[in-house]
Length: 165
Image (cartoon, rainbow, N blue to C red):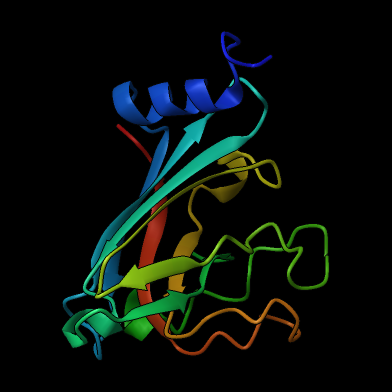
């Protein structure tokens, strides 16, 4: 039935493969994880949502052969990644929703021996709403229930969301 139909997935693959992102966040590691780095890309879609692609290197399990762990990834209120990320504020939550329904609650990263790649579609925020905010990588997984932020551990990576040039 869907074999010859264009689906959102086909458009998403084309965006990721051939188009420049509309916004990016270059991720840098905390003082405890200085090797951690990555790039989170944001693409405006024709479906009134945002396609998010994240690629992160040197997560904490990099030295553990065959290790896989989940790491929370969130958009925080402020894009100030200085002072070991102490000024990023809370999760971006313009509608005052409970966790995990904040607009800033993103899918977790699954780190496989220090590397994670993820792509997903989200309609809870627009590009204009997130420019200047930060993407935070946490040391643990998000439990999707603890209030206000999922008991996801310390901030180990941070990047300010900027318009792509």
